Image 1: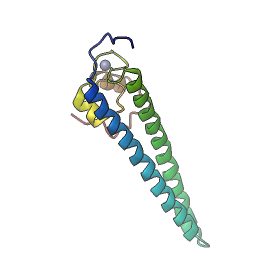
Image 2: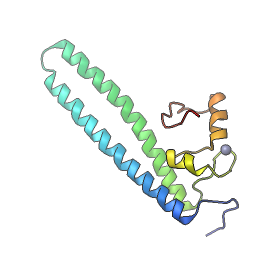
Image 3: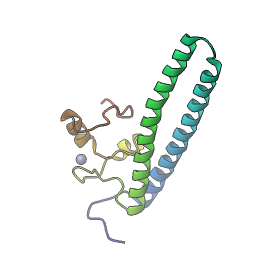
Length: 137
Ligand SMILES: [Zn+2]
């Protein structure tokens, strides 16, 4: 295994982040299954009434949006897990510096350090600026 050029997380920290990522992935999968169940129920219940049907369709739209966000987050989590395996996890993809551990604990699939994240957001270079997990410091 090549030695990383930059200071990286310790094996214990990596284990911890891996566990957090896997847990988050389960959480998303569980939530999306629950949501799906709810919407299917409301579509079933929305029999004749067109207002009911409209409401059910709206629920479905919201769910589709949520599912898209979840899919994106799952993808980011898988990328982070792959980076842990590759030994590159924890480095900012923009400047290469190590992302601060508290930030990683808060957003285990963070790709950028807080400095780069803010700069990229300001420049409008991030497509997923709706990162609810980003703390407003
Ligand atoms: Zn950076």
